[in-house]
Amino acid sequence: MSSLDDLREQWNHLYRTQLPGLARAKDAAQPKWPVQLDHCFARIILDNAVGRDRPWNQVLKSPAYKHMSREQLDSAITLGQKLSSGEADLVALDERSLALRGKRSKIKTEPAAARKNLKRKGDLEDERTQERKKQATRGKVFSYFQPSAEVKSEKLKDSIDESEKANQTSSEIITLINSSSELSAFRKSILALLTQVPRGRYTTYQALADHVGEISHKSSARAVGSAMRNNPFAPVVPCHRVLASDGTIGGFGGQWGEDGQHASEKRRLLREEGVKFDGKGKAVGEPFRGFR
Image (cartoon, rainbow, N blue to C red; front, side):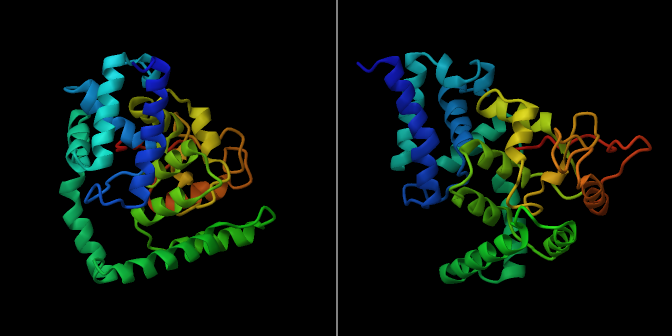
């Protein structure tokens, strides 16, 4: 019989490495991989295998792997292995997990998004066209949004102007994030979450930390801020849409923080996107929390 430590190691490898690897490779085990990030696989598996009729974090303390019983670890590992082999339907389990959490279905929103992409890009079912599109996207993002450390404010402004012309889909950007060998898994997950914040809305460091705590492990606003520092995909991955909990610029002392070099640029970007500030410099309205 495997020890608890062995089961924990097996579980961590399964959701952190094995399943994300299969998703990135678009393995034939699943006809569709709606998620690619480790914390998303943890959410789906734990909600279905451990929480069952409720989100797993209403049953277990975080981090889950330290608090699961042998039976719960066995159930989670078994379901993860079924996803790896194709015996379980990832899309169906993801939809059930989202429903348990009161989140919007991905399936319902896909037809409109597909029609929009079809109109804008043509036939996205053609694999060769899709591959050329991905290559073009990679070139654009890296040429526009990865300036050197010595980049001057004028060049930064030019790159931001270029970003307004770029029309990248969330899936393309997430593919780029996941392909980076220089980012930790946590940084990738935070940057991927930023792509969900709609234009004209803002979120907060604490809202992101709360979401990570709900689906994966306990985190903090400062940890989120550190993960966003030196974002290589800005502003396509919109870290400028993240503010302090009180609606001020925030930033934990970074260049895009309240006293940073680019604070005024951050406000300008947000205003142009439709975010309004009151007389005290605080964003008006509730922060976005609809992360999936």
